[in-house]
Length: 289
Length: 165
Image (cartoon, rainbow over all chains, first blue to last red; front, side):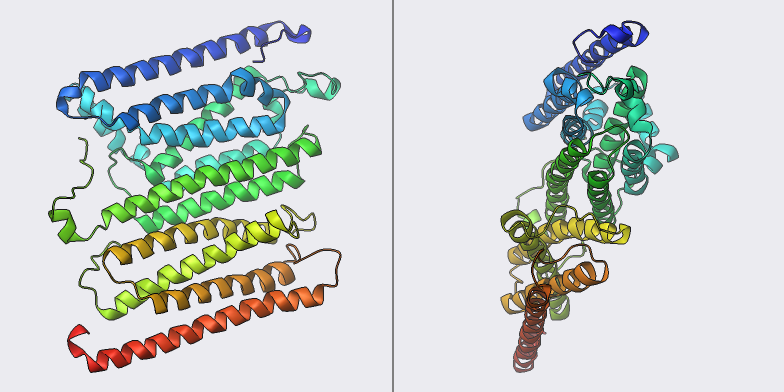
């Protein structure tokens, strides 16, 4: 996926690695356009907070920047850059997108029949299962342990580096594996964030205590993995880069998880507002439905 | 957690004050450990190569819980404040209990039992360990004293002023 041509594999994977960015850029552009046009089309149903639209666009930009451009390119060759892109793609972008309430907007914008279908899909048992913080935590944190603590990481950044350690594109990606891993990091991150601080309607939202407990588990699992990688680098990552990457993962993860924590507590604070004041007119933010 | 506290009886109000204080105390102690000893003094390190798996897990959970405790403790306090239910004596006592308990746990379990890392490296450890554990114990005991005294005072006040109970 790096921009420079590399003499050693100007074949299948090269074509693939040029197609993927185009594809992702196209998807991101379509998603941004769909969201903004839905907001415009449903304006008559009431104000849609501009902050949500801003979150949506910012989240898409964060995801694209994580994969392409200077950071995305550096991520193939450097573990610290890879970790920065991982925090961006798997944590910050999902948080921004979740706070944009895309499902609420879709239910508002769709015709009654597809809207009901979407609502039914979201309420079906498999979706409810993975949308629970427990399974979502296992998917995102477990997936990361699988990626970094097994040879999967070196499959993502193929074996070229072993024979040409000095080559600057040593960690050139196998596009298919890399795309699947990135998709998993992003989707699992979205699922987890939505299960903790989602604003979209779901069938049954677990209690604040349950959500807090899973957030702590995920927070801890992320930090423990970062410290583990500090000492035991993934296959093919030099020790000093592993240390730098672990620090990025640890403190970058802290920052995003702290934001999620504050959002969760703030929601509790709003939900437990004393009754007298609620009836006195300082209304809760209007539920968008 | 979400039950209405508006006309809460005094014990529930006390418990909420203590919960908020203990959480915030744990968070403050964890925060001081991170900022002062890791970032400013550099006595502690991000990772000590002798760390065991159990130590790594315990450290990770405590780090995550420390952040949670800070934020949740403050939101609980804000909730008490908007209901005018804060009792600063109990809250302060609970903060000391939380901070002291964290310091002792960190000192005894992390530094000594799991040998996660030491207070400082390249020095005679004994005075540092004594100071670390002693400080934790002193803060914990101080907090317990404050809690006991404030509880006694509250009970005395209630006896003299029944309708509030």
